Image (tube, rainbow, N blue to C red; front, side, top):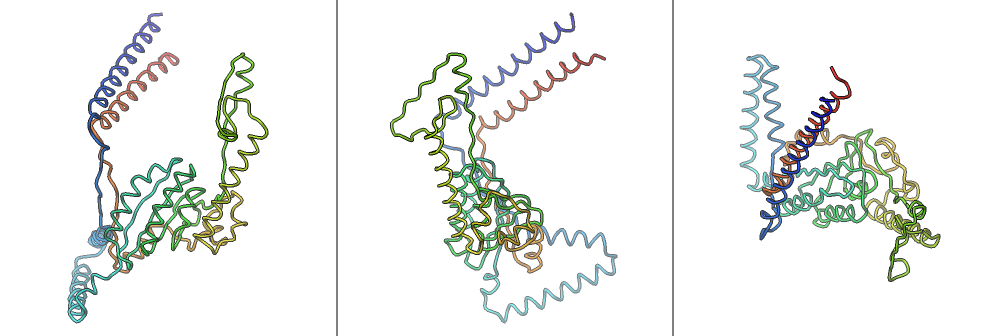
Length: 350
């Protein structure tokens, strides 16, 4: 009995602490957000090609003995001297015309929320990229909302509209809305077991009308327009509304198919628009992708061609309330873990 009293007291303390933390965070968020615009961020750039060369030199230093290392350094200096001598005979701008590669990462959730970062990254790159350069997008997404992925695809279309080569690499998955984005690539590469495709549309929702009716609960829904609502969660659904809902899905599917055909006319759209997914090697056979290759292998080829490769990333600036929100979340999580451990000890006393 005493042990149960301790458990109850501990729970009350935990609730008070967590509630206090959340109240403080809410107050700071309310005052900190007054009169301020949306928090901005900044572009971060890393030269991946430079990091690759430094890694290779570090590995050479460990693997080669001193004599072999001296010989290699001498050969490199000789090659560098010859390169500089050849450059003097060439136009001054030839080095500056070498194609560069800009790498962007997109990890999509159901709402394609990463599109806010993608638009900033693409805007930054388009301000500097030339037509001989290349944009490589490392894409990973199982799809999500139609309008969200439509916007994400429109961001990639900006690169194509500028005439800059767009390569998309899929290492894990580009399905549904993810493939809507991927099919815009001038060159689409995928790992052998990456999941590709699912050119289809789905929607589902529960209906609890019968449960509410059983308990004598009425739900009123008033609309202006015959099909303002087709299927609902709480109201009584009709066959006419159900048919309209299915028609809307079919119309969306047709728009999706048309989009894929325009972006990638080599595919047999009727064959690949069944909503199925394929692994990389199967997708290659159906012309959904152009080449079987990981993004790492593709980048290594760029390094070996001595191309400059830059990773471009938009770093979101977090406001004070957002930072405190993370801290509060961690504190609340810690408190709940402590409660769970206490309860576990109650179930399994030592």
